[in-house]
Image 1 (tube, rainbow, N blue to C red):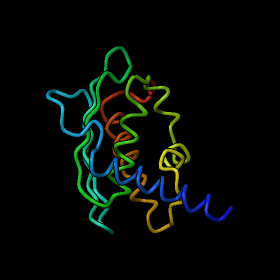
Image 2 (image 1 turned 30 degrees about the horizontal axis):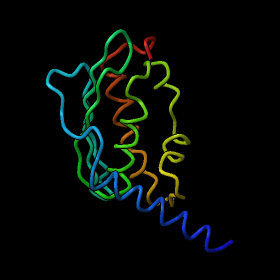
Image 3 (image 1 turned 180 degrees about the vertical axis):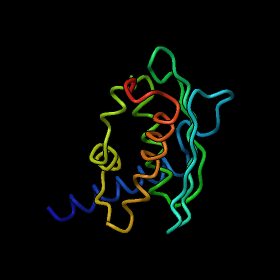
Length: 134
């Protein structure tokens, strides 16, 4: 049974490294409806997200960043998860879903890395849209 868990850990590590090396939705958008950039000063991770909305739904989303594999893979996974979702659905996305998407245990020291993309996305949408739309 121990070997099964070791295999799963390796599978998830490969999954995270794939998103780190080949991020989905990488780049920036011209004339985004929402944009925000933030960093984690403790480790130097930095993420910017640009969002294009249509009728309260994420039509397109791009991110640009630098930092550790966890922060960048988490942002990549998050952009995949929210594309096509309504602002109300995105408002319901929380820490648990982000960590579940990563699929591996995240230490307390890496938690801010894993959640930076979510913080950036929610801030971008909050600053752009009135809170009742979220």
